[in-house]
Image 1 (spheres, rainbow, N blue to C red):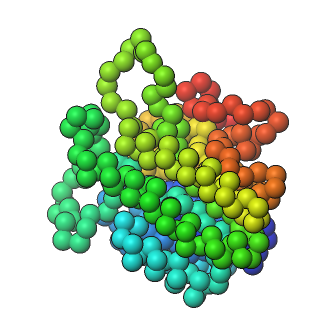
Image 2: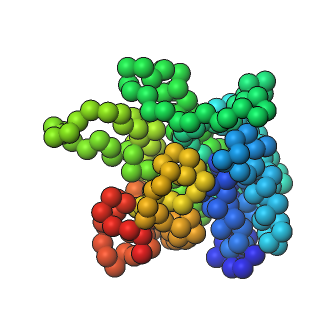
Length: 293
């Protein structure tokens, strides 16, 4: 532990086995929070995506922080409820919630019994157009990205409201804005309609909940990258991407939103570079027009 910005706070971070989620859990713990790390990944199922929920907790504890591993499937109601209950029992009342978990290619860990045979090559993500995209897969995006966040907020917000303090951060994506309005000179191809659609719903939910709890001293915001974030998942889904944002910089933007009093900022759907450099104004997505500094 190196800082005290969140000393005495208890946080839940979903999707905390690797990538942005694991980095956010470590960042909060590094600033004094006790962190419940929730994820479905309890063992590495694709060598390109290293990390488990237990690895994240081990790294936090090795650095002198306090953390709890809560393996769970966020599409299962009982698991979501158990996550909130176990965190409160083991760490204390939750006053920070980071809904980071999301469905992205190449997908979630296989269910027990459906693992890839040992030695077989991992599947490569292939874009699937709308007509051929299974409704089951579309629903899964909303189950993980939206409904789990919805339920967790319902479970922890009463305690935050009662205490008169708390912060919720929902991690979203510029995919919620793609494609922009047509007509398009070069239309065709596929878009991240399932992922982007779920993130668009999460953003509206963020504003609606923020409006409702604003008088109670609880802030609810959403954060998205202004640039692609350098994670192992990015190297799988978009190999060769240039101008990426270091994950540590994205985490700093998240911490700033979480520590800002709701009287000054709530209901914001923010881009990370705008949070880090407010003096430059709200610039939005920058990944297509300039490299990360």
